[in-house]
Amino acid sequence: QVQLVESGGGLVQAGGSLRLSCAASGSIFSVNEMGWYRQTPGAQRELVARITRDGGITKYADSVKGRFTISRLESTVLLQMGSLEPEDTAVYFCNARGVRSGYDYYPNLWGQGTQVTVAS
Image (tube, rainbow, N blue to C red):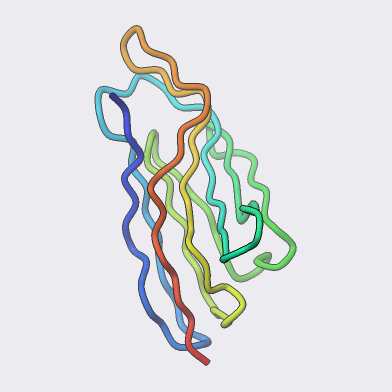
């Protein structure tokens, strides 16, 4: 059973930085796109950033462009967050599409979520 294991959330002051990490556990053969989404109470989950399998193409939400950077190494994806604002407070979820592990295929996997709180 493949799982996405996230780490790196926490409490930070406005203007500070945090780095989120997400690794696919298990015997992974390949992973297509990976990304980060976030969700606040009562709101829909929204895209923060995505990255292609080879890392060559990235996509960011307008609200985080220039402040966040997504990167990956094989089945691990990182989100470096800088100049954090209180509006960035949310639960951040890792996402992986097209995960192959042995004979198993997972079209769309989600992590358990990690809380990021930015204090003003």
